[in-house]
Amino acid sequence: MSINWILLIIGGVFEAGFAISLGKAQESLGKEKLMWLASFAICVSISMYLLYRSMGGARPIPVGTAYAVWAGIGAVCSVIFGIFIFAEPVTVWRMVFLSTLIVSLVGLQIVTPV
Image (tube, rainbow, N blue to C red; front, side, top):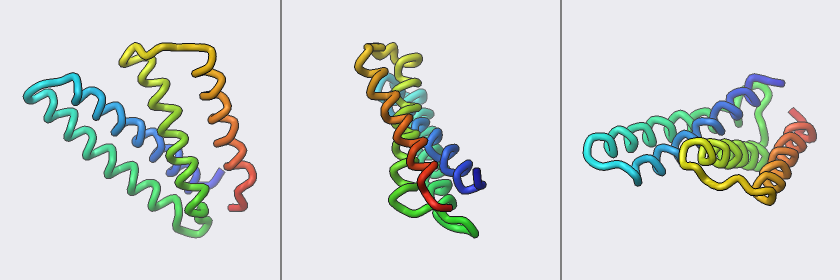
């Protein structure tokens, strides 16, 4: 696995961080809300930068693949964090489709020539 894939995976986790930050900001007031909004700004900046970096360098990941994997990792992590942080429901169908998404992301990584 190249450094670009590692950067992309970390960027996807930060994407989930900005989604969770927005969710927590919705639940908060005053200074706590500002803290979560600052967390959002930091996470989105890091996430976008890592997405950008993963598409460059000696072994760049193609834009379509990079964006799909980045967004997919963010979605998977957001669902998992949502279950633990926001007590979102865990249903069989949610887990089936989450598993399908994970398999698709791994498949994209396997078939992308980098």
